[in-house]
Image (cartoon, rainbow, N blue to C red):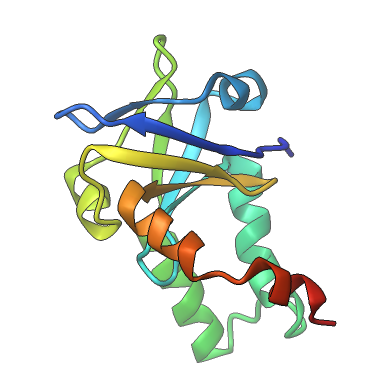
Length: 143
């Protein structure tokens, strides 16, 4: 598991290519998985094993995945249908498909947000709006 932390602002080119932050490139493997977050606000980017662990973790509190559960089967099926394989190219870039860019509302200005075992790719304005709506002091004081 990589430790991906920090916020980095980058520009995406017209072909949907993004240069990864150097601190991310240092710890990531070449093969990644990209999926929209459940609310279609951004894209989640995982290493292969971390994606599998994330999906499995969604079912942990419910006794694990059970193929006989229609809800669990449907959830896993939809999640796995939305994920795409991605490789970091020789220039340290990833390529986002037009569909991925559309789902997450990505245009040119994007923000990479590290979240320990994965990172997220946000539209810069959407990220700024999200951060502006968060009352960090209140969240930290909640038990």
